[in-house]
Structures are given as structure tokens and as C-alpha cells.
Length: 201
Image (cartoon, rainbow, N blue to C red; front, top):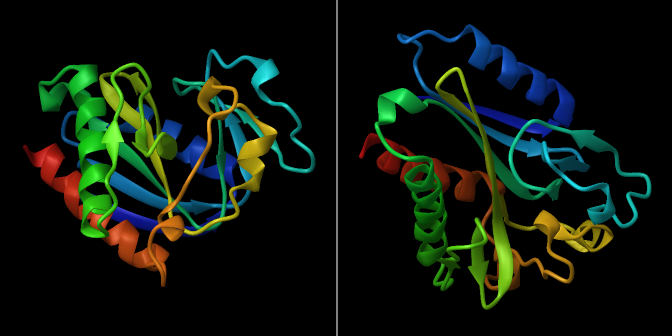
């Protein structure tokens, strides 16, 4: 498993790079996690409904090919793109999502944050508020896109959308529960550790 880190990145170049990596990979290509901190952007899923973007303001909106509706990426959020060979895993899509959620929950447990997944709404929640989002695409038997975990960020842009297509869904972050808040680097390294365990399982 190869790990790459990218800070302060615009969304579109990373999106295009993911697609190229997926199109060019072979059965021998090593899986990679791309750990990214994005500049402010709203991303809309492949079947996303425009009415879920309430007021984009000066934040760019990018149409993507992942599943799910609209979400926000910005400074202080850890995004991990899971560029893995799906056929090699020998698991279902549901199990893939479950493994991502369990890795996030394990990280949050280290900070004594009681997080959980919901069967009908992918992602990870704390006391009814969403702290992490998932959005995946499988093409050529390979996975790309991935997950985002809110660490210490300005959450107000989430109020400009219906996050993940749910009106009134409140968002939260690690900084709401832990002070001083752990660094982006610390959280990202813990997340990669647990993800690697689940993908080796």
C-alpha cells in the first residue's frame, strides 16, 4: 500500500489524477491512499440534485462521478482517496463501505468520541450529527474517491447545502469534542493506519 500526502490542493486536478490512475492501473498496480486537504469546494455526486445546493456563494461547485449528493471539502478536513483494486479485495460494496466507516470510528474512539454508522445513511455520526462522509466510484474493477473526516475546520459552508442530500443535517468535527484539537497530520496518520488494517483484512 503506497501512501501519498497532499496539502492545500484544488479539487479538479486531484479528481483528474484519480481517474487517470484508475484508467491506467493493471492487475499488478499497487494500491494507494491519497491523503488530501482540499481548498474550499462543493462536490456534487453523479446523480446529485441541484436543489441540494442552497447557496454556493463564492465557493466553486464541481460535478464528479462518485456516488452520493453534495458535500463540502475545505481546510482542516482530512480526505482519503482509496485507490484500491476492488476485485482483489473479494468483498461486497456494502462491506467496503463498512470497512471505511469502521476505520473512522476507530480513530474517533482514540479521542473518546462515541461515533457510529447508520444503515441507511452512509457516513459516520456523533450524537445525530455527521462527522465523516463517504462517496465512492468503482470502475474497471477498481475503487476511487473515498472519505472525508472533519477535524478542525469552518463548518459554516455546510449550511449552504443540504449535506449529502439531507435538509437540516448538522455537521460536527473533532474540534467540537477535543481541545486542544489534534493536528491534521496526527489524525490523518491514525486514519491511514486503521484503513490499512481493514484493507489488509
